[in-house]
Image (cartoon, rainbow, N blue to C red; front, side, top):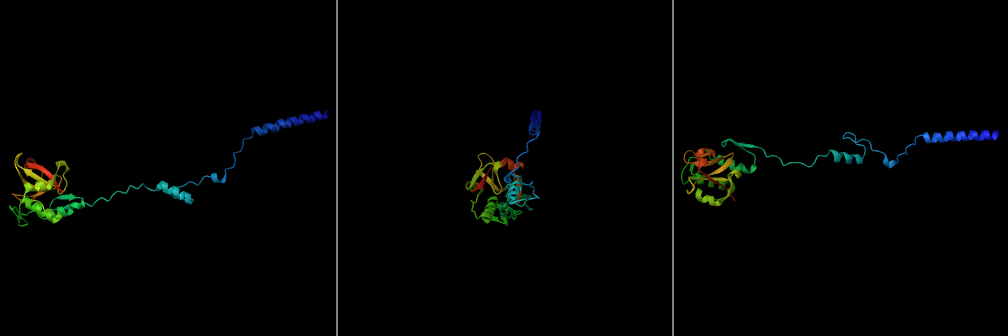
Length: 207
């Protein structure tokens, strides 16, 4: 009898222990040393050399450095502002002729005609010798479209489809050009003025 009781008690204990092992949650395995997470990385808290690399990769700006914007300069006598420094000597030299009287066949500051003015400016600024007459000067240039003109291009005029070129000037910007007119001498005019708009023939760029 006593043996049967002992066996019954052991059976009960066995069942109880089996229940406890099944009900207890399994503990996760301890993390290995190499798998420990790094401390949070911020620009203000760098924790290791590896973190320095990570911060730099995150915070370093892209290489988007643009070329410096040229400083704007104002030519008072022309009443215009320019940015491209390549034009500065040209526009400053040309502006120094403002007010020079018109004189046919001459090319000095005592008096000059249209082609004389253009040839003097180009020789002083670029060391280029252009043809002396506006008509022959057209052969010294490469023709460009009116909407593609840039500072320093030459503008040519004629009175009709079959008429020869009779006048030339130097394009500035914003439809403005500088030239020596028979009435007024060296001055700045606009291609939008009716007279020049009507007689405009072509623009050319000196090669």
